[in-house]
Image 1 (cartoon, one colour):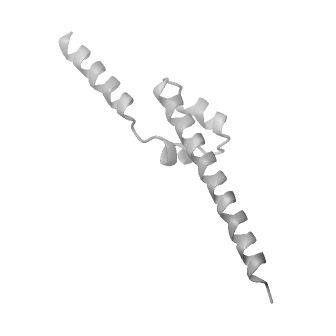
Image 2 (cartoon, rainbow, N blue to C red; image 1 turned 60 degrees about the vertical axis):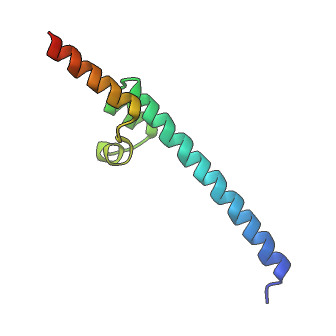
Length: 82
């Protein structure tokens, strides 16, 4: 039978691993979003992330950030003024 001490230690280690994994996911997602904001082509971002299929990159990471929305609005306004 497993002791309570061992169960507590396992629980602590698991929580720490989950926190590290979550932080790495957030860092990766933020990095990717910033690459898109910087105007990098989807193909370059796909390769940088190590995805074999561009659909993976498109499905997970191409949400529109606030800055990207503002850029789009500015570009459209500039086009209309022409």
